[in-house]
Amino acid sequence: MNTHKRALLSAYDKSGIVELAQGLVELGWQLVSSGGTASAIAAAGIPVEDVAAVTGSPIMLGHRVVTLHPKVHGGILADLDDETHLVDLATHGIEPFGLVAVNLYPFTSEPGIELIDIGGPTMVRGAAKNHAHVGVLVDPADYPRVLDELRANGELGADMRRSLARKAFAHTAAYDAAIVTWFDEVDRVAAGDDADPLPTSLHYALDRAQDLRYGENPHQVGARYRHHGRGGWWDTAIQHGGKELSYLNLYDTEAAWRLVQTLGDGPAVAVIKHANPCGVAVHDDITEAYIRAHQCDEISAFGGIVAINRIVPKSLAEALATVFTEVVVAPGFEPDALDVLTKKKNLRVIEAKPPTWPTLDVRSIDGGFLVQTLDRVSLDRANWRVVTERSPSDTEWVDLELAWKVAARVTSNTIVLVKDGQAVGIGAGQQNRRDSGRIAAEKAAGRAQGGACASDAFFPFRDGLDAAAEAGATAIIQPGGSVRDQEVIDAANDYGMAMVFTGERHFRH
Image (cartoon, rainbow, N blue to C red; front, side, top):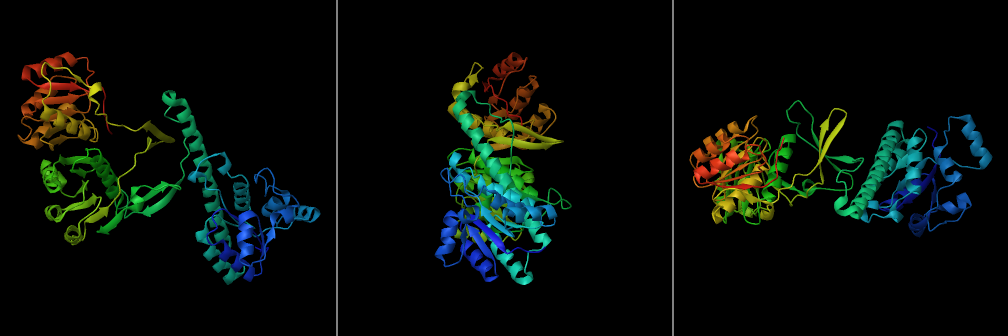
């Protein structure tokens, strides 16, 4: 590459731009710039030519047209190995650029028409297309390594130019994706209740944020990606101890952390194994909540994930430390508790902020994705219906609500048994509901007496009610909607049970 030592600098984010300009000038480069970038460079005493002097055209249309000119884009896009391009450059008095450093208006900071950058993306795409001859910079973090290579070799190597071009196209793709998303959001707000919750197209821009220990299995490679320009709770989480995280550590911890946030305002603990709750409890004392959650299924809790919605005290840490646990996540830890937990060398101890909730649920299939709106659990009793002769007691209502929250987060088919704020039996992921009920009852081992039973979908036969009654449940919550609903209601009445229809199914696969 025969480097043309002429650089075009136009950066909204001026971090490092003066240092880049100084380094280039010291290497004999000529600088062209405009607006605030030119002012910042000139204020540092660095020689710079204004774009208007190059084009012979003033800034116009309220700064919408500055760099859109053949003397700019001809200098960026010229293929210097093509004789006809060289003739055109000479004929029109255009000088080529060897480096273009541009970053864009921060559209996501305050989305609107005037923050849709036109000249910036055009220059970036042109330079990236012509990376055989031009280096393109969109990230101030890359300025030092570009200067280092120029100092060492006098030019940018092909590998460097290609990697910078790839990054540039990713940058403009993410920018356009953000604009499309904004259009969709504006249209949804304008449409109100009539809005289609699924846009006509999806445009995700994702950046690799974290390399993982491995994927679901050790022979698989895994990483965490995040939406470009946005973060989640994982980006601010603090890991106080333990091994590097694997794919399943993140997947299960995400499930646990989301579940515990839905369990109400009081102290709560969720224990997750393979993305399914195997223990959940609420209690005024957070340590007691953990003990009760663990007691639901102590065998499955081995090697599980524990999510806690309160600052972890030493007493809870001491109880947890006796159990092999992969991850514990909480909003914080008392110093004494942290001392206890970090002595467990394999335990990942994560301090985290509450999660946000995505709008859409996306899964891969051949040739594309399955997309659906998020499954949100309503506890609005105005939409629920007591269908039995007996209504739930106050204590049964509390357990019914907890059982319903948990059932919505368990793989279908699901039966959940709850007593006194403690899940005592959870049957998950069975091909028929009767087996789920049997598993839940076996795990409850008599502890469901006088408690609540939740089913994520309707009972197709009365045998589901029979199993709940045998387990000791006295109150049932389910969607209803079976052709045999009356048969199931009659069975509940025969047992003296209270039963609530929610009218809403919560399958989870």
